[in-house]
Image (cartoon, rainbow, N blue to C red; front, side, top):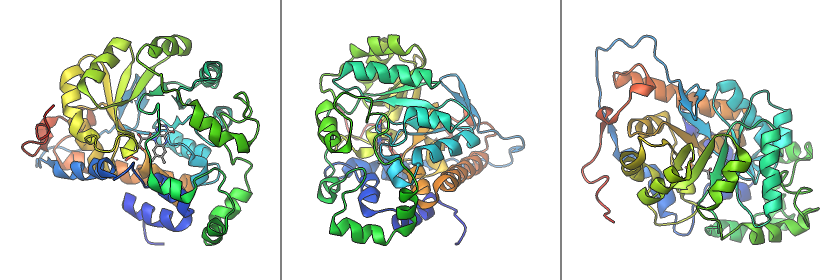
Length: 388
Ligand SMILES: Cc1cc2nc3c(=O)[nH]c(=O)nc-3n(C[C@H](O)[C@H](O)[C@H](O)COP(=O)(O)O)c2cc1C
C-alpha cells in the first residue's frame, strides 16, 4: 500500500472497505448538500501569509480545551454509528485519540456503550448528549457519563428534528444492516468488514438498548429514535442539564451571533460553531464563514470551538487563526477508522498534525496559541457577502 499522506488517501481506502450504506451515511449532507460542500470549499478561499527567516525550533501545537491539555487543537467529534464503520469503532477511535493526546467524544447514538468505552480506555473521554423526551432516561445517561469519568459533556443543540439525507432513505440505513439481496451483494465485496463484524457482539445502539424503557431489542429501536428526539428542547433546558452534570459543558451547533450570546448567558463553558457537518439546515452558511462574527461578538466571554469541513491541518490552522480555541474532526477520522481501524485514526491524526505543524512554521510561528488573523489573507467580502 502506498504511504498515507492525505486525509483523501484514507477516504479512498474507506470507500473500498466499508459497505455503501455506511459510507453514504457519513459522506452526505442534507437535501442539496450545499452547506456540506461549502463547509469544505470556503476553507479553500482563505490563504496564508508566508513569513521567512524566523527561528522555527521548539515549535508546539499544544493548547487546552475547557481547561484540559490537548496535543493539538483538534478533538474527535461525536459521530453516531461509528461502530458500524469498523467493528468496535468507538473503542478503536477512543484509543487512538487517547494515545495522541486529543479528546474523543462519544455520541449518544454510538454502538459501543459509555461503560464499554470506559472499560477499554485509560483516560477520560467526552460524552455527547442528545436530549430525548424520556427525561428519566436522559438523566440516567448523564449520570452514567459521570460515573464513567467523562471529563466534558457536549450538548448538541441543532438536532431536535432530523435533517433529511436522501441516500439514507434510499439505502434503508439501519444498524445492523438488513440482509436484503442488495446489501448482501455489497457486503460480500467487503469481507474484511464482514468478518470483523462477525467477530464482535457490538451491533446495536449500546447506550440505549437495555437502558431506555421499551427498547429491549432492535426491532423497536428505529421507531423509538424517530419518536424520541425532543422537539421541545430549548435554552431553558440548559440549566437542569448543567446542574445534573456538574462538569464542563460545551454547546454544539451554534451558527448565529444571537445564539452565541445566549450560549454565554446559559453559563456553558464553551460553544462549538457548527452546522453538524452540513447534515441539518441545508443552505446555512459554512462554519468557517460564520466563525469570525461569532468570535468578534462573544470571543472574550466564552471559549469558542468550531467544526464542519476540516480535512487538513491547514484547515485547523485557519480556524484557530480566525479565533477558534480548537476544532473537531468528524469525517476526517471516520475515513481513517473505516480504512484501517485504530491505525487509520492515528494516521488521520498524524496527517493533520504534520500539516498543522509545517504550515505554522512556514507562516513564521512557533506556537499554535500565537496564530491570529494576521497570519491569514481573507478574501474581500468573506464575512459580508451575505448580510442579515
Ligand atoms: C456520520 C456522522 C454522524 C454524526 N453523528 C453525530 C452525533 O451522533 N451527534 C452529534 O452531535 N453530531 C454528529 N455528527 C456531527 C459531527 O459531530 C460534526 O459536527 C461534523 O461531522 C463535523 O463536520 P465534518 O464531518 O465535516 O468534520 C455526525 C456527523 C457525521 C458525519
